[in-house]
Image 1 (cartoon, rainbow, N blue to C red):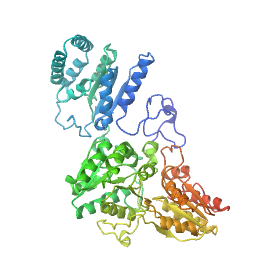
Image 2: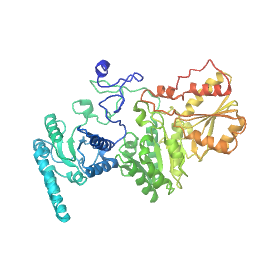
Image 3: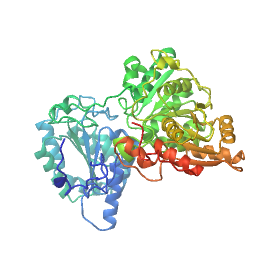
Image 4: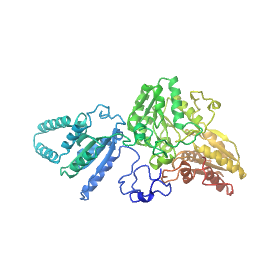
Length: 579
């Protein structure tokens, strides 16, 4: 679809590097992006901070925080509303309820009051400035009365508001927000009138305006396929059909989901947990066979982790299936509620490493570091789809401590799974804990790779062979526990060792270097070089371009090996990545 860049530049800064706009709000891109976003449930907290900052500086601008019915399932939103009610600062919260997520407050169970003329009139009445200001005067008078009378008056007001607004409004009132709605979010005339009334009111306090909308409204392909049009690649504007890349394999996401389904077929204790990401994690496939054994907790990663810990306490086999980037939101729960108690919760971390168009906000760069640093946590990463399926089986068998495995966005290598001993329904074979495998034997340099980086290491070995350098490639499989026997042997047999991982500094390489140093293997002639993601954000774009920018392509690996050995090559295209 063509975009007029010249017309767009007045509103946004076109990213020349990726020839595109960012997928999420970004302060550097536009003055109309007041706060960066990508993860969920943050707008009310940020807006409240801005409202307090405004008042401290003596400014008079309005602050409006927009939040969706999915995002408001996140606990952070309620923490923010509770604080907003306490501070009683002037701000507007717009709840965009498009009936895509089941809210705990029951706004979205498809049986709310009709959104039409009557509801619209009531909402306009609630927004009426004299009514709100009269209510504030009454509040002031009430505060001078005895505490018991204050409580009774508050309850009377609350019930009156409930009768006007329909069911559910009292939750927001309890948190201290003045509730208006539900209002037809597609009725622009009414919406503008309400917003103008609220903005010009002189009374203090936060206001929540509840809008009912339809996702994709006005564009038929989006109205009829709301899930598939949530995040799109290039598509035909007329039909809505998206361009599909030719692939030789299923996605890693689907391999995981089908492998977990195979395990659940054989063990009724296997349970799947996700945080409002059934489609993204592939668990909708699992749900088709086991609807009673999959739990969507909403956008509530902290709860998801501790909920899974509770399942583990009862002897079940929970898989907390959460994107690497989103699992960061539940880290204290991983540490305190799971690892500290050595509960066998299994963490399946999708979208590990670079994530293409999803960019920096969704990049799974940090999970190796934050998971492998926890005592007793078994940390795995597959180099291909067969390894992933086997790691699902491995995690099922680990029942004395927590475990995790990371896997990338994208597609498998197209392996013949039967040749790898995997059944037709994708039942894998448990791996020996802490044991890596030599994928290629050599004598000059050892490429010690973790996860998807193994494939770039194998390609680098091919490049090095053309320059007369013989490379060993080790698939570590485990970051923790490390295969110290294999690594010690490789360190003694090679003059150069290079670790490669698609993760941040402090991850796999850190564990390898810790072992090498303590084992005295760095005291001699071994030259060791770590290759990790750089210490900067990598914006959205084509995955191959991102990998090149990160310096983790086969060419970069080969070049690092030769440089460390004091050699040069004419056979290396440093910017080239595996297709």
